[in-house]
Length: 461
Image (tube, rainbow, N blue to C red):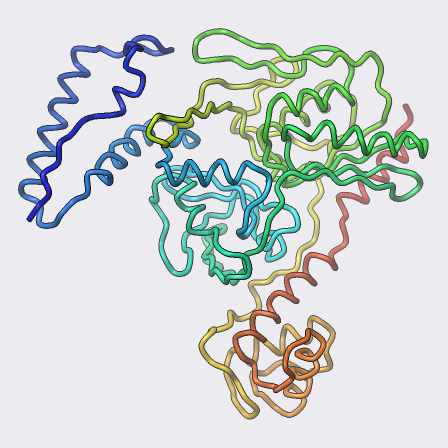
């Protein structure tokens, strides 16, 4: 028997003391109430004729999602579970594959693959569309956080991610692990050049950066490469505070609100202490673009890499009394001299791509077969190709599990603390792919970093 549903449109009662015309845009209250009554009648009519039972919570979530879908790609309604997951994600660490994602017109798009994550090691890129999670099509799933819930999981568990990139379907078998999202790394590299990697602008970012700068000062470091690649943003205040360490006084960002007001954030630094080069790419977004834009348009550093993401809008997050939450766009920001950023991004002064290993050329493991000596199939071919890439002494890969390949698989198993039985079982398949992605991420020359170092060496202040 169909469940009778009493429709109370909570979304117009969240803040009962605030009228419909209290915000940046006004609604025709009489027409709005008429429309709401009509919608209730339509829903009631449909449910009386509908074949199956419908849960009231699902209906309400659908109404919320429908409303937020007419705003923009970054405005989202979160169920209580999704909101809790969101707060966990922003706490600094979580278990998953390591991507920041956004719901863009019903598609789950990678904004940034996080550093030292399974995603970036596998070759997932900013702009990739996540279409499948464990063969489940998540296209049209309401909200990026809902998809994120599917992607996350327990440490050490497998997840299959289906990607669409430039019209091509790609598949990645990943193993979830703990991801630390808020880190600052500092070291001294070639010819006393400082290297500072910032992966997110969070509450403690500036404190951590100052700690690294103290070490640089003790070693008389005057030139610094600031690596903001795959930094998806974070807190506006943190980005502005960090700019106060590197660029001279004057406005660095303008925030124009829907209410018609404007905030101007400035640097108070009297004189530049360091010569800086910034590294950015397609995963550099939001607060990162505030930082990069100020450096570029004030002419106080050189930008190297590829075009940034182009997210120049500000969202505000609100917790609702039932444990759910809403996030919606409340402002747009502009860089120095009111230069727009949204849907444009920051163009590097020196555009250069880093080389990559194409992981898609390796056949995907079936995760069903467990090839033994004498077998002929694609799992054997993939294992042989990976072993060859890793430097094992296999013959030209042909998919035939001969004695030589068997011997090299046993050696690989022994090298990786697996039982050396020679069967290409699921555990061995997973370890082969992990070894391949680790090799791919650690054996590629960082041309962008080297270009930044050279630019600083050649720069005359």
